[in-house]
Image 1 (cartoon, one colour):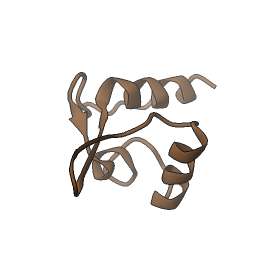
Image 2 (cartoon, rainbow, N blue to C red):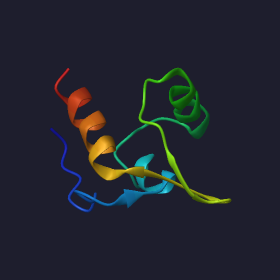
Image 3 (tube, rainbow, N blue to C red):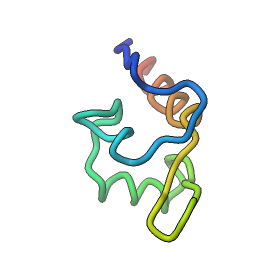
Length: 69
């Protein structure tokens, strides 16, 4: 399994922290948002009109589950 040490355990994360090259998920923004729409990836939470976040534990579960496939 790849290690993403700087990825938070139990916080909120923004899309820039999720998607490669800085994050653990190697997909484009459009693919990610299609996954949200289709229910393949966790649903975001809105903190404000221009602030969208995801629970770090949900994202961690997603990339850890796919690293075992």
